[in-house]
Length: 132
Image (cartoon, rainbow, N blue to C red):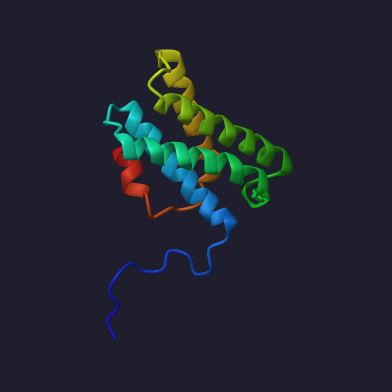
């Protein structure tokens, strides 16, 4: 029998950690798109703000110990909280974004990419992240 549609990305059922990682990856893509000058309409702004707020809430309750040691999971949680706050500030029109703030955001994204997604192969947004 032929199967149409996407193949299964994860063999197991999705849990909170999978949802958390997908939301984190989506937020990184959205921030990179904003920094590259893509337009931010009403719906995209709302989506970024909701995603950042949900990530900030999820990071407190999600077990990230599988991604590294206890110390590194604490640092990872702090980096995610910082990224969600940075995303809210970048999306708002009142926040001036200078070269140093832009570099700090990109450095935070790079550190998160190294620590979270270096061992995992995310198929869902891989091409989008490279494009943005």
